[in-house]
Every structure is written in structure tokens, then in C-alpha cells.
Length: 92
Image (tube, rainbow, N blue to C red; front, side, top):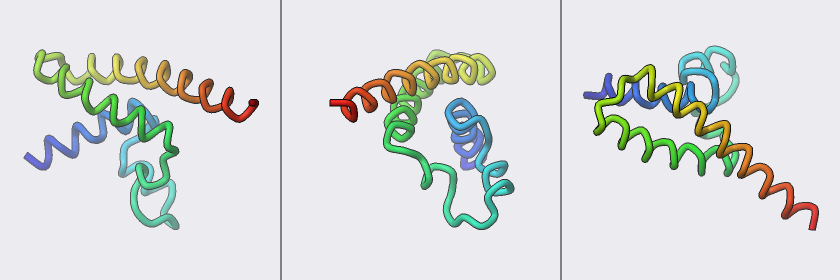
């Protein structure tokens, strides 16, 4: 079961961050923790939303490759919106 979880966690990591946890560790050997420890608040909000959507898609028996593509599209859309909202608050 942990192998499935790690695999699903990496689906979310790739959809949002563009890399697996292992790839991030290899690129950042000097950093402690994991990719999510260095995520922005907007990335964490998006990640939480994606976790819920991924669970729904798993229950609907949507293949992992299709979920990854859809989750990536959603991540791009949500991050755009979240960053725009944050930038508007800063400008006021």
C-alpha cells in the first residue's frame, strides 16, 4: 500500500512541481525535508485541492496518465488564479 501512496504522491508532485520527490532531492541535496516543505502557501492550497480531486478521479477509475494530465491543467489554472489574487492584495 505504501508503494501506491508514494506513486500517487508523485503524481501530485509532478502535476504541480514538475518533478518527483526523488528528482527534487537529487537536485537539492543541501536542503533538508522534501519538496512540499519548500512550497509556497499558494502551492499548498493548490496541492490540497488536487489531493481531493485526485481521490475523486481514482474512485471514478480514471487512469493515472489521464489524471496526471488533468491535474497538471488544474494546477496551472489554480496557481494562476491564486497568484493573481495575491498580487491584487499587494497592490492595494
